[in-house]
Amino acid sequence: ALTAWDAGDARCLTHPELGSLLGVAYLDHLAAHFGPGLEKLAGAYHNGAGFMREFLRDGRTLPDDMPPKGREYIRRACQIWHKYAEDDEPTPPEPEPPAVA
Image (cartoon, rainbow, N blue to C red; front, side, top):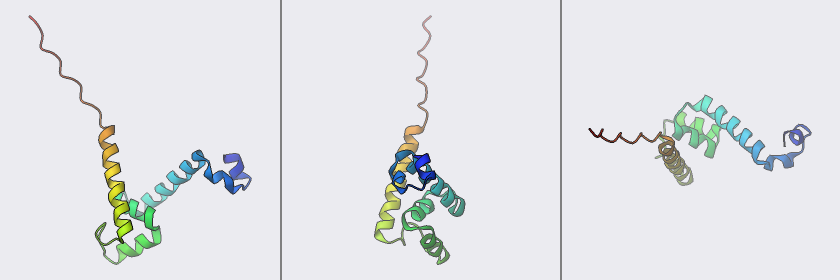
């Protein structure tokens, strides 16, 4: 896919590996501008960085003042994030059984 990209073939944009690389690069770019907060990052990803800059400059709050689709997108992104964050938590070890004397 990267060879096709270097050759200017836009069809390679549908390749999962390249799409993932570009998606991560874009999220990294947005995180640099909007900080580590998931709500701001999801809002900028869904609505665009320009919209998000104006939104925050106007003093509006997330996600309450977002348009309905943006509010829903942020809500779902946060739910998914928290679900996977919980799944990534290390499972505490089982307690040792009491020693038999």
